[in-house]
Image: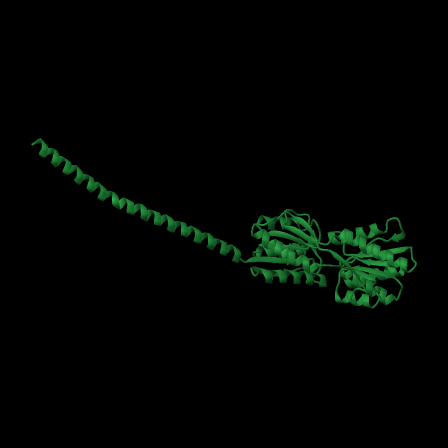
Length: 337
C-alpha cells in the first residue's frame, strides 16, 4: 500500500511540474514580444532623429542686409555677394534695405522694421558706432544674430565683422599720393581731405591712416571736409581745396572720390587725386587722368562671407565677434584694365 501511495505521489508531482512548464512558455513569448517592442521603439527614435536633422538642414532663415544708404555702387557689390551666398545655401530668404541717405534715425528704423518682419539675422554696415546700439540690443534680445559688414557698431555680441583694415588702407592711400607727388617733383604743399562724417568708423579710420602716412614730411594736411558721401557736395569741397592751392586731394569713399575727380577735371589743375572704392564713374575718372588712383575693397566678399557666417551661427556655429579683413588693391590707370 505504501508503494502504491508513493507511486501516485510521484505521478502527481510530475504532472504539476509539466503544468508549470507550460505556464512558463508564454512568459518566454512575452519576453520576445517585449524585445520586439523595444527594438521598434529604438527604430522610432532613430527615425525621429533623422527627421529632426532633415528639418534643421532645410530650415529657412530670414536675413536682412542694412547699409548706410543705397547711393553708392559699393553697397550694390555687397548686395551681390549676399545674393550669391543665399543662392548657394538655398535656405535663406534675403532682403537688402537701407535709408535713401546716411541718417542714424532712418537706419534705426530699418533695424526695427527688420526685427518686426521676423529677421533671424541682420548684416549691418553701421552709419555710426554708437547711434544704433539700443536698436541692436533690442534685436539681439529678440534672438536676432548680428553680423557687421564694412563698418561695425560698438554693440556686442556679434557673430563677426567682415571689413577692410581701413587704417592700413588709408595709410596706403597716403603713401600712394606721396609717391606720385614725388614723381612730379613735389615734396611739400597743402593736402585736402574730403570725407563722409566724423562718426562713420570706416571713413574716420581711413582719414587717420591717410594722415599717418604724411608724418615726418613737409606737407600740410588741411582740416577734413564732411559731405556725407554726396558727390556734388564733395566736388564743391574739393574745388575749394584746389582753389586754396592744394597739391593733392583725398576722397574717403566712393561719393567723395567722384567729387574729387570731377573737381580736378573741371579745374584742369595738376592736382593728384587719390580716392577710395570703385565704381564705373571712379574708373572712368582714372582713365581720363582726373584721378591718379583709388583703393579698391572687396565688398562682394564681405556680403558673401557675412551671409555664410550668419547661417552658421543660426545653426549653432561660432559667434565670437571675430574680425576678418577682406583686403584692398591700389588701382591706377596702368592696372584698371
